[in-house]
Length: 399
Image (tube, rainbow, N blue to C red; front, top):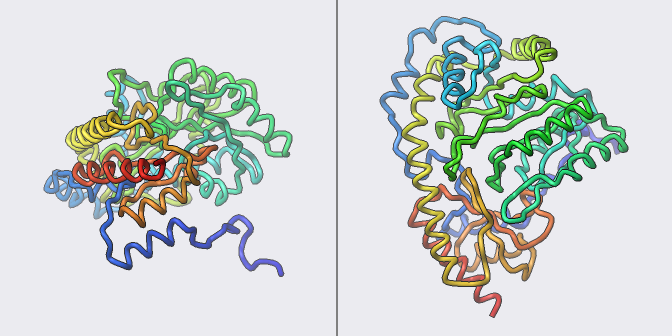
């Protein structure tokens, strides 16, 4: 029988064993040490509430001023943000959106006809599969490999484009996430040039997701893809991570790169944005204040991440079974653990037997078992106790 619904939504919606176990754990009211925290508004940070609420009460928001690209004041504030990253971005080259997901939707619609392909890294964030499905876009994978740090496998990058072509899917863009979620790795100059090379070889654009850009754990200040000049580049970011304000729904697209293509790209994106006019006025007027909030919030978050990373390393030093992979930035760490069972089975056992919640590596398309993903923004005491229980559980399994 033919489905009543569109094939693009033909997902497997059955609840997986991990989610079933978590729901049962919560229904039973059992203790939960959540090492998967991703919502910064509930991990004990201190916001300047008065300043944010005053900004949202701007009287100018009572007047409707349809601006497809977003209000000039909001775009100017974002341009100033990039200036502090040593990159000049004109407010005219910015498109405001309600989220990076919406920004992906706009860029996919701009670049891809149904059945076209985008090259995406693996391991990486699972949301991309759904964003691509909704826009009738295919994904072709290229690999990030680990060898004393993460880097692109160049052969897999070009193979990914060739596989897409062989499957009848025209490659249109390559996605670069920096720092990657969950590997925490940035793209260096050599790798940015590699991406530019494949763009030149296959007439591709770069879609750069930089929501975690500011959370570098090294002394090196990462260079934004908004500074890239050698390929048409769409740099996506927003206040969800920059200012730890996911509920405010503020993001943007910075269009840069090849001057021969940029004006046409901006004109077409403006029509797409004008079709929706999705950004609301109170939030747009508050963007300057919300971006100012990042100075305090980022300091708090980076202190939390570094404190938890130091605690993790201290506990790992007292045992030999588990170790963490190198992380350069972002909010997550990857533990390599003995592959005594599948990552999902280990995560479920940890939850049921110790009350510790972690994410199994297969959520992020790790090719092999033996990887757990943990959040570094978890409150310090929960993190300390959770890691101790995790390591004790793994040690017991391997006895």
